[in-house]
Image 1 (cartoon, rainbow over the protein chains, first blue to last red):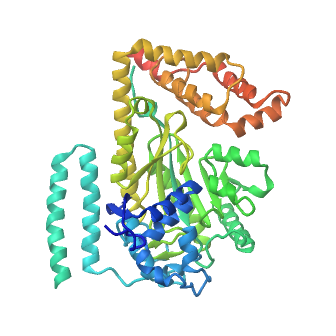
Image 2 (cartoon, rainbow over the protein chains, first blue to last red):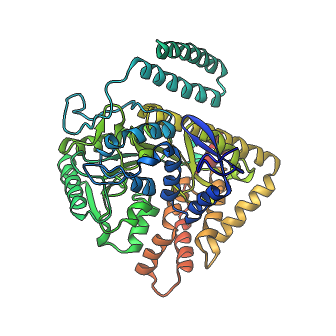
Length: 181
Length: 345
C-alpha cells in the first residue's frame, strides 16, 4: 500500500484519526510517520493540531500559497499554527475549510444559538454559503439522530436506539434519492 | 453510606468562544486590537453589571498571581502564555470570568459546583448578550460563530465536568472509558484541560464537537456521559468497600495521617493523598465536607502556596508551606453529609 501522505513510498504504519464523523485510518510510510512523531515530540497542542489539520486538507496542498485578502494570512501559516487570521478567512479558504470542518465535527451546518441581529443582513455576517439545501437538512437530521442513538446505547436504552436506527435508515434512503434526483 | 453525584462531581463549566465581527482575530503583536477588545469588554460589563467585574491585566500581575488564576480555573494556560496583552474580567463571586485576547477575542466561562451545566450555560449567555449588545460577534448562518481555530467553530461552546474518578483509575478502566467517550464526540482530559495529567484521578469530560450540534444537545451529551461515569465510579466504590474494606480504609487513613501531620510535601504527593482524602470524605470515613477537599484542590497548589508563604511565613519552603496550609484547612472539622446519611439510614 502507498503512503496516504506523500503518495510515493510504501506505507508501513497505520494511524487512526477519530473525528465527529467516526474514525478513519491513514497509512503512512516511515518518513511521514517520523514527521508526525517529530510533531508529537514538540509537545504543543497546536503543532499536533496543525499536523492533523494539514492531513485533513491535503487535497488542497497545491493551493498553500493562497492569501486572505482581508488580513493577509497565508494558508500555509494556518496549516502551521492551526489558527485563522480573521472571520473573512473562512470565506477566502472556504474550499479547504469546509471539508476540514466536516471531518473535524462531522457536520458543516451550524445548529443552535445565533446573535441577536443574525436575522438581519448585517456587516457581521461573513456568508460562506447560501441557505442549506434539503439534502443538507436531511444530513443534519441524520447526524442528530446518530448522536441520539449513540447516547441511547450509552444509557443502555436499546429500544430507543433501535427506533433511532430505523429512522436513520429511512432518512439515509431519502437522502440518497434526493442526491440522485 | 450514600454515594451521590456530589461524591464524584467537583465542578462544572461552560465556556463560549466569541470574536468581534469588525476586528481581526487575536494575534500576538497586535497590541492595538488587543487593547480595543479589553476596552469593549470592560465597558460592556460595567454597563450591564456595574461594579461586579474586576479587570485583571496579566501584564500588571506577577507570574505567581497569574498561575494562581490558572489553578483557580479563572484563566487558561493559553491566556498566561499571552500575558503581554491577555486580560480577564472576573465577577466578584468568581463564578464567571471573561478572558480577553486568548485564542479568541473573548472566552466567556461560567462555573457551577455540581452537575448543572444548564445553569452555567444560562449565566454564560447572560454575559454573552451583554457583550454582544455593545459590539456584534463574527457569525455565519451556515458555520455559526467564527473562531480563530476551526475546532471551536459553530456554537463555540465547550461544556465540561470535572470528576473525581479514583476507582475507575484503580481498576484501570480509564482507557476503555476514553475510547467510548471519544465515540460520542467527547473527550477526557486531565485537571487543567488540554495536555494536562490526570493528577489525583481528577478528569475533565468535555465536548470536542462544536459544529452541527446545538448548545442544548452538547450540554445534554456531556451530562449524560457525566452521569454514566458517576454511576460507574460509585458502583466500583461500593464493590471495593464490600470486598476490601480494610485495604480501602487503610489507604485513606494513611493519606489522611500524612496530610494532617507531614512537614514537607510536593504537589504530586499532595494530589495522591488528596484523592484518598476526598474518597474518604465521600465514603463517610472522615469528618470533613467534600467542599473542604475541593478548596484544597486549588489552595494547596504551587502558586497558591507561594502566595501563602510570601504573606504569612517567608522563612519556610513551599513544601513546608503546603503542609501548613493543608493542616490549617483540615483543623476545621466540618459536617460530613455522607457520614450523616449513613447514621440516618
